[in-house]
Length: 284
Image 1 (tube, rainbow, N blue to C red):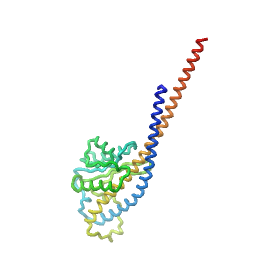
Image 2 (cartoon, helix red, strand yellow):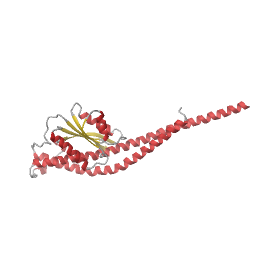
Image 3 (cartoon, rainbow, N blue to C red):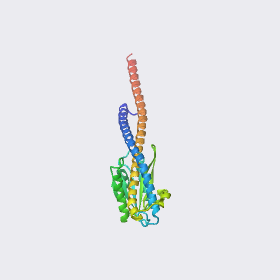
């Protein structure tokens, strides 16, 4: 059995770690409240713009718009949303593995959001077009616009022939999962049903092509922003859950260590008493 001194040292170490995990749990919980509110506020706007895009795209009919036309795929672009910090369970790793899964056997260029995704993919020898840090927990629309402009420029220049977005979908406080969405060329089937009753009344000025060229990049920016906000909620819930689990594990470990310490202490006391009795008997 370990000595009492070693056990006390371990108890002190676990206590210190537990204080850290408790603090991180509280911080994540506090941030989550604001992030969840932002997510709830963003959702209706995101759904509304999907309906607008569905109306415009399906109302335009046949079009040669570069964002809608498929072409031979020589290089795939992937935007992957991860965090800048760890200690959030499998949140970062699951997103990275999902991204690698859709590009297996393909030539790919990655745009990473979060240092954890960059580090993971760099270790795998992946090629990068851009890396963004410092925005994963509190994303803004300006951040999404920068990313959107980067991928639309790459697509228009022919640097990539298709673009996918890998983010984490929020299911509940204790559940989330990586999701893949094709951004370019625009997947019209994923837009859902358009408002058919209004299509025959819609006239676009100056013309359909000009409207599409303006609206689709805005839609891409909005999709990215929605994914950033949703992923930030998932990162915080994952961290909160992981720290809560770590705190519980620390409590169990402390119970075990205290039991070992008390046994060792009891053994030491018993040994001292035995030695005293033996010494007393020897003097008689």
